[in-house]
Image (tube, rainbow, N blue to C red):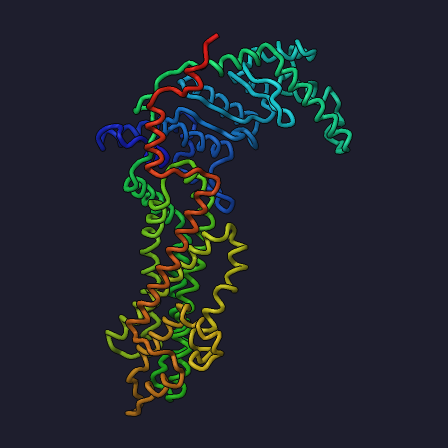
Length: 525
C-alpha cells in the first residue's frame, strides 16, 4: 500500500521511526478493513482479474484512511455492492467517524441498517435541500410534515416512495411534461417547508455564530518530498513490471523473432551480387528502423492507457506530483527499452552479413537503441493526448505514415515535391535510416569495386554525418518526450485548482492569522 508513504506527513520523525509507523498503519488498515485475504493479490482492472468489487471499495477507503486525513469525501462508496458488503463498508466508515474524523459520503437508497449508522444527513430532491441535520430527528420532522414513517419501514425507502412521490408507483414510468412540472412543484414545496422549519433556523444560527478554534501549523497536511514519492513509485512500477511478466516476455520474444526473421530472409547478403546487396541491405535496414520505432510505440501505448486513469485519480488525490511520476515511469521503462534493441541487433546484424567491423556493429546498435527510445517517447505522447486505446490506434496511421513515406526508402527525398520536402526533417525514421545506410555503404566495396558511395549518391539521403543523424533522433525524442510531459501536466490539472508553493504559503499564513472579520464582527445571539 503506497498511499501512506506518498502522501503522509514527512515531518513525523526520523526516517526509521517514520517507516515503522507507516508499516504499522498499513497493517492496521488491512486488518481494520478486512483485507487480509487479498493482501498479496493485485487489485486488477478490466482485463486482469483481481480482488472483488467490495474489496476494491474498501481498499480505496483504506488508502484515504491511512493518510490520517481529517476529512474524507466518498462518492457512492456502496454503489454496486451486495447488501452484506455495503453494510460492512458503512460500518467501517462509522468506525472512522468515531475516531474523530469527518466522513462525508453520498449514499443511494441505503438499507435500514446502513441508515441507522449515519449521524447527520442531507436529503436532496430535484437539486433542493429538503432536510439537513441529525438523522435521529429526521423521522419526527417527516411526521410533522404529514408523512409518518411506519415502525418496520426503511426511512430511506419511505422518503422516496411516500415523501418525494406521494406513494405514486407510476412516477418512474411517466416522462411527460406534466409529471416533470409536478415533481418540480413538489420539490419547491418540500424545500420551502424545510426553509421555514425550526431545524433550519437552528442550523442558520450555528453557521452564523461558529465556534472559532485557532488553527495551528501542526494541522496542515503536506505531501512527502519528491524524492520519497519517486522512490515509492519506482518500487511500485518495478513490482508491476515483474508481475506483468507476460508483456515483458512478449517484448523480449519480439526482439528475438524479428531479429531471426529479418536475418533469415536476407541471410548472408554479402555473398550476393552488388545490385542484390544494395536492394537487400536497404530493405533490411529500413525494416530495422520501422520495427524498432513502431514496436516501442505500441508497447508503451498498450501499458500507459491502462495506467492513465490510475494516474489521474491518484494525482488528483495528492498522492504524488507529476515530476515524480514521470521520472519513475521513464526509469522503470528504460532498461527494457535498451535491452530489446540490443538483443535485436546482436541477432540481426551478423545474420544479415553487414560489415564485420566492431565500430560498425556498435553504431548499428546505438542507432536502434535511439530509435527505440524515440518510439517510447512517441507512445507516451499518444497516451497523454488520447484517453482510449481505440482513439490512439485510429490516430497512429495519420501521425506515423508521413514518417514512413519520408523515411528515405520509398521517396528520393532530394528530388521530392518541394513544398512537402520539409517532412523528411521531422521523421526519426529518416535519420535512423540515413545513419544505418552511411554506416554500411560509405566506402563499401564488392570485388574491389566501390559500390557504396555511388549508391549513396543515388539515394540522396542528405548531407549529415552518422553522428549528426543520431543526435537528431535524440533531439526529436526529447521534444516529443517534453510534449508528452506538458500534455500530462494539462491533463492532471483539469478540474483542479493547483496552487504554487508560494500560493500555499500565503494561504497558510492567512489561516494562521486572526479569524475572518465576517464572524468576529457578528454579535452572538
